[in-house]
Length: 79
Image (cartoon, one colour):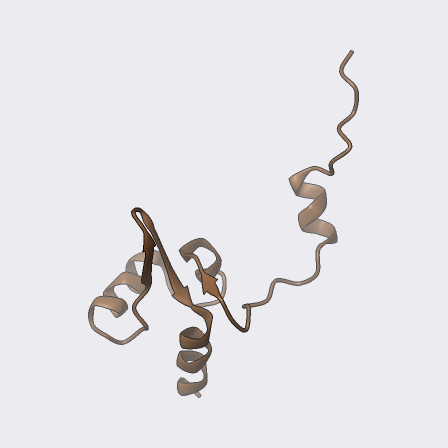
C-alpha cells in the first residue's frame, strides 16, 4: 500500500488558492496571459504581429514571455 502524499493535489491547490491575478511586475507566459485577455491564442499572435498587442520578450531558446508592465499598460489603454 502506498503512503498518502504530504503534498496537496493540483486540484485541491486550485480550489483553495487565492483568485488569479496578473502580476504587477515580472514576466507572464502565454498560458497565464490567455486567462486575462478576451481572445484566443491565434488572435493573440495576430495582434502581436499587427502591433496591436505588446510583443513578448525572448527569455531563452523556446521561452517567450510578456513583461507584466507592458500588459498593464495595454489594459489601461483599452479603457
